[in-house]
Length: 332
Image 1 (spheres, rainbow, N blue to C red):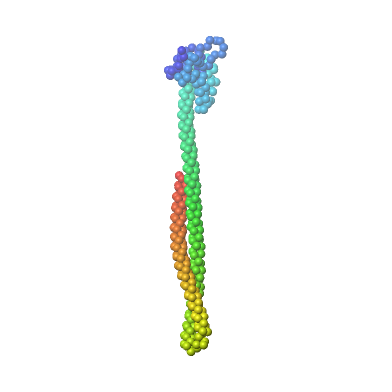
Image 2 (cartoon, one colour; image 1 turned 180 degrees about the horizontal axis):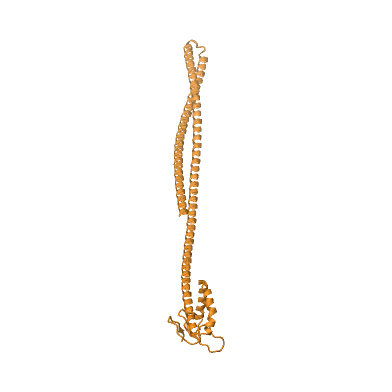
């Protein structure tokens, strides 16, 4: 069965002491081979599962770290003669035991202090590592927030550019319609002007035809008067009756023909004048309709300009808010 070491006081046993300063057992030497320096398994194992040899190595490292290497070196230099004479020099052994006890207590104190210092250093290192990890996480979060803010800014700028392009397209289309309606209005006005000129020309022709009709009527009146005079002379000029009657008949036929021609021409002039008036009225109506359409298009263009100005103001506010958010993110 394996024996474990307890914290009880030293036990006096024959043989050589264990090389581990905290072990109270002695190692019996059989006289064969090299004597052992430490208690070994399986009969000696400490509660932490380590052997005396392992714990002695840890003790030496602790001594080296604590600055007691010189003391223990002196102890090791004097321990050989003391152990050789331990059987005969009991007094020297007691003094040596006191030195050993003092050295052990000092080493243990230094070891505990070194362990506390190491534990504190490890705790500070763990805190520093945790702080570094936290700072790294915060930096990564800041980078993610910055990337997200940049992406949102790019999206907002792209949407603003699209909206601006759409507004520009609408304004361009509206101006194209304005130009088209202006062209139609100009054409209608030109057409009305042409029709007015044609009507004026027709009225001038009608006036000239009226003047011709009046002249023909005057001529006709003269012919009627001459006819009457010829009829008065008919009784007196029997000899010339046949020829005079024929002449009168011919003159009457000519007058009737002239009257018929004048009447037809007057009817044609009146019909043409009425048609010109109708065309002028239609042209005026088309020009008024074109003016109304032009006013509507101008009102639509003005509404589009106002919407574009409102959209630009909203975009400016969105960009200002985005810049303020980015500045606040950088400050945080």
